[in-house]
Length: 508
Image (cartoon, rainbow, N blue to C red; front, side):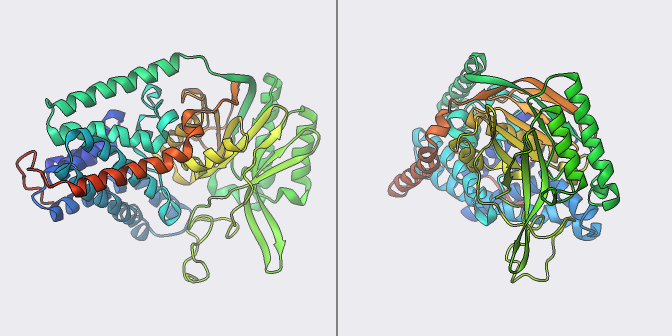
């Protein structure tokens, strides 16, 4: 394996959240490495091979935690669970292989003035496709690596996370294609400084908030192995109620948030546990957002939903049913055909997607709700804000992944939704990482992993103003692929140019 490939894989691992050490800027070694092999491979076949293995191995390494829920909660032996991240990487490597072909085509034919925009568009299109095809898996978004540095993610308010990823990838590609002292690299460095200037300016500007609310997140830290045990139901309910009572006693609260399926029973049945929750909400005078399974009777039996309830002190409820379900976790794709495949994690059964994403309303709060990994999909947050949400709420349960990098990676991705949409994002989880993120991507409050806590955020901004990205969402979503097509057609019409650098052996 070449040094370029090793650096690209190591950069992806060390730039994204991982269990060892992290430096976000190192993630740029991934697009730089792909551009390097695209420009210098001795043949297109060699470029495809190098691009595939760089993408496959970096994805498998970054998603190492995918085997944990399958083994720990799906009952699958380690011998079968350990290959799962590798298999995921082998699929995701197809995207980087296709990207490498596209980069090589543009590099060979386009002048630098057009090549770098082409590279940016190519990376953006790759992430767009990865977020849509086969139910979508935009987990490894390049821009998410920079979530710990809010100054570098402000571009998402204009280009979206995918567009920002493309811009960052092009900046990293310039020295890999043209050399570190070339004019294109100098231009890329100036653009990078402009991105930093934009970030500092946005962070210095006051937030356009309409009001503030005191929000408290309750993180129950319930052991996943006990969560669905009927014997533990009363204990779980009391744990959340006790933490909530103390939070209300400590400070006035406008909203309490409990995590996804924090209540492991059918709240809609109105049994004794449900009545305890209603009594608490009425007595405290505080609205409560919480997760619980739900069902709808049908001719074929019951249809199950992963639901978020908003319970007002008056007893009135509103609800949102999760619309983007986790394949093989909440349902089995093509279940009627793949009858031999069961769900890989424990639960009640196959869920069905909800259809109504309108905000949950309470006073001056319009809560755009995202359950679990819905927070990694830009289009879902876009629809919530378009429907009138003035704050985003992501309730999740990352206990499946243990003490791994997954909860941090999930938080990083959710943070991008706050910047893209210019909305505060309230993230309530069972075992962490719970947080409140302001519309600029700054973390206002954050809890730890595997600890029970009440996390207050007294000045949570409520915002109605929209970002440039939100207002021009369709233009960006379709415009960047359109520009990629135009630049690709231009490259097709131009003759192949002489190689920028002497090819080197990149055999893996």
